[in-house]
Length: 94
Length: 483
Image (cartoon, rainbow over all chains, first blue to last red; front, side, top):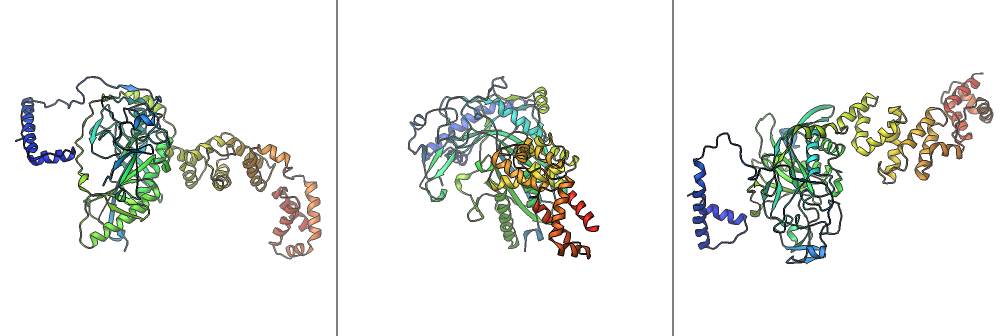
């Protein structure tokens, strides 16, 4: 077992996912089989290989510091579940 | 009993500095402060699906510059990572930051407390994006049923500067913060407008018994936005920790918040706050490769930093205190340098900048940047005094007049007829009149009462509306009284 049920519970909490008992068992099993598959990589000797920062070998993709038009406030809030006085409105935080 | 009778404090600070770019770190939205809510936002900084961030070159330039100003190593290879957590001020549910390969590391800055110099280590400095602003419907977050979110600040570039836990007193912490903020301002990394939240501090502090070499358990108080808050917060938190330790209790390692109104720190512990950020490399941004040519270019354009400026001012004859005051605000130091180009007596200039001019500006809530008395005008005024054309006393009237009217000192002196009377004949006539009118004081002086001459000089100055050359008056008066 690569990942325990307790760890799956923790990850679900961090991801704000509410899982049923059944889903919890199912995901624990599925995540384990994914991790076991990936464990194949452990067979490779990576001594002296630096960690990959990006899969594509491309560096320094930069833009100039020039202001571009932003969106209209009305458009910004159009998809908001709730809005008030130009703010996104969110339920009680703590 | 004060905490420092028994314990030694250990403190390190994380400082967030908003960088002075026109646009956000990953999109072209304006970073301008104070726009109407949710008007400086676009699909990228709102984290809408399918968008791609592109790094602002100026952010990298400023981060390199800050690193050099803080004596850091600039990484040849650096990348961004996602820091995952849920909070409504973060639209993507992760903050794009730097984790294991920050752009700057292993630096230091020097502080001076009561004349003692000390180096404070800089562990690292990294680039990241700011979060949005929350406006709670109730008085505080805990008493609000809902909150409003403004994402204008989301994506404003931040430099997070992490110090080593090198500070051992509240004064050292304040000296570190003041020096750091000055360096950021002088190097042009940030406008450092504290009142707009451009600089924020997270303070990590613990106590240990004096003589102990191990660190105690620390707390972190987040989001302090002024030097004064840091001082008050530390004083409170240190006493709180000392009380717990004195009673044999243990400090809980936790995040706390500073309540400015109550003057106390409060625990922010909650189940939501599991510190498990699951950092991973940001796949939407390409890594940075910073060659030495890039670094050298930025190094060669580095402006004079506060420490160098203080040293230069001292070499011009200013006491350490004066040099410290003048460099404490960049605008004041810039003003001083501009005036110095036209008037090279640094000490006299410093007296006027720190004294009369500062006083006038303060009384009118005006900054040195917007001073109605230009550096050239002040230099002109001081030149008139130095040449003996007006007295220092008249100079004080003239600077007020420049402030009010914007006219040049030469014009004011001419228009108001303030030129100092250095004509011996004219002065002698007035002195004779004053001597004749005050036989008692003359008698007193001649009988040995040295003080009596002050009254007579005062009368002469009054008769000339302060325009008599004081040195000359003294010489002539004493001569006449000795006859």
